[in-house]
Length: 540
Ligand code: N01
Image 1 (tube, helix red, strand yellow):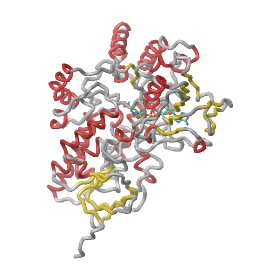
Image 2 (tube, rainbow, N blue to C red):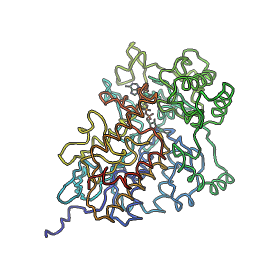
Image 3 (cartoon, protein in one colour):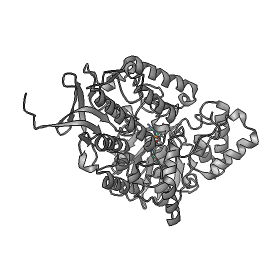
Image 4 (cartoon, rainbow, N blue to C red):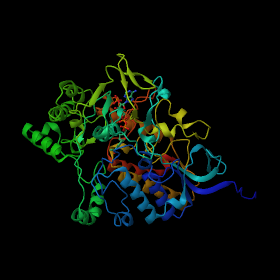
């Protein structure tokens, strides 16, 4: 037997990414099964998306205490200061997570995985990093989230800008001072809205470049006082338990009536109540067919537009921010939660540039030029143009199948997975919080916990049955893909050019990237696959 090569790190499992899904997976495999596991992360610390997204105003818009680890030792020893905490509070939270679960000691930071391939003979993944380090492991878990690959449009002159310019998720850790400056924000998704809210407070002039309006809903933000915190301590376990039963993994049940089953008065009452209470209630739906029935959807849109238009003084801005005719059905692109977003546009120094009518054609050394030849001179630009969601990062990591074909190549015409977690030809690879799973239609940490538990259960089963590898059957993946497509066709989602549909990236196949039938049904499908169906859906 050849002596072990000391330059090669030998592990049971390699996890890529130190965010919620990577940490959960490490915790389950290492702390519960006793596996030798390491996380590799390109960043310098824990947090994943909460490590990278340091842009001004970065804040979660899914509420705590259940946007968090449902691990008792973690939540019982942590106190939140507000319902929707900001990025800094998450940094402190991940520090706390490390104190409780000892995660950092098994992390390799500032390191990027550049290739991974499976060797059938040894039944191990061989992984290489940008520093030339080699790691081998039986299990490979790219846990990179959906927002790891930035989308930066290829505007002419982008590199020529002489001022400060950053993509939102490559933001410097030291603050960018906008006082007295002319600033531009390109993009009005969740990120753009949060930056605009911050910059409009301090900048001399703020130019907002909007292509499609975001149907923002009021954030029901709340600073927790000592009494609130005490109450939360008592209720958190029950809230997490409730999350296990609901469709989106949120601590509230969804609506149980369809639009057609409600009277006009009942609809009005509930729409008003949900809007006034704030949060995503209106998106979760006043009725259960919001994303299915065009009339139901239009009723919510018209209600939202009326409420929003009343907040905007200027008629031109009003028609751009909340048009009478919706550019896409309500909720088919992700709405944001706002705090005074629309009122910012009533200030004379906050300008709205419509890049739908006049796209950006060039970035110059001093500003931004649109197709109508208007030039906007600015000192600072925030590029808030989003991400090549989910597939972008996985397709660029150099992951190869048993025949040496790259995962990006395999997905060139469309995504195919089994359960959104495994891919035929990539044995012992698991993809938490990724494609063809409820990912962005769920409360992230709660949903991720299901997937991490499933990975743990499958590894446990393999150990118990002496299996070296599992690989999903191509037929099982085809059937899963067919389900994703069939569910997509039942909804209004294909009517929007959203990142959910891959439609925000030029050349990316347009298809619904996620599985829309809810977390409990997803969990049941996972359980089925390791029960009686196991020999049918997996090749061992
Ligand atoms: O990205 P986005 P994001 N020229 O893709 C515009 C999560 N998140 O970073 O809509 C001009 O949503 C684009 O216009 P259009 C959350 O799940 C959560 O904001 O394609 N404009 C759009 O306005 C979210 O959904 C939180 O027409 C261009 C914007 O850029 C996801 O991350 C906070 C353009 C991109 O919006 C992504 O959000 C932040 C071009 N060439 C993010 N290309 C919270 O929890 C794109 N745009 C609070």
